[in-house]
Length: 311
Image (cartoon, rainbow, N blue to C red; front, side, top):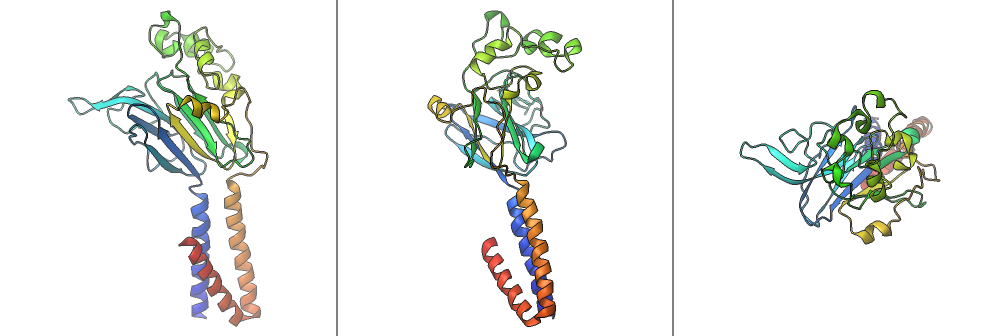
């Protein structure tokens, strides 16, 4: 009896560990640097989302890094450029700086101009929502491509061309809000309520170069084709993508939010794991009562099989 109880306990532990490994870290972000210069990506969790184990790293030209993202994570990713330590030991970057004086970014705050990729994993309906924003300006091209979508319904999105703005803006590739600071351009004050902030003369220049990215603070609420949805996908983010790479992935042109037609979500993994544990427990309990000798052999066989899967 003691041997059977121990084997049953080990079986439950193996089942839980097996399904937990599949469900907790179910999304992979592969970040690649195709720029001709070094970048320092910053990966920062949103409000109410636990911080990731890896939030900062450096990528030389041609290098890439793969990161595991937990389910239900939300946050932002951007690239910092021309970074170095000054004589006082503070870490500063010419673009994308966090303003903390260190390599670590404490929150989702960055000094414009910077191009940002945004993610909300397992949002409404269990779908991932993602997009690229030029609302804080533009410092380099970003391409976001979903991977592993067998249905072909998940769309790539990007801001891949350098915006060419009017000369009176004064600061290359920054936003009209950062350049002028008035409420109308910053969507503040009387222009803060949703729907009152309109695209400006200046934001239209970003629109011509980055038509699939958010371009001003209220853009997400006004133009639904700026955010995209996907189910059961990993994501490949490329800084300074080659033009052929961008066109090869059929970057969405106003296609709107398109969930996978399969209707599957990552939460299925969690549901299946719970159901599997409950069903196995019921079956083994019944078998233990009706045929104790057979139950011991069954528990040992299943434990061995799960051990091979978890190896």
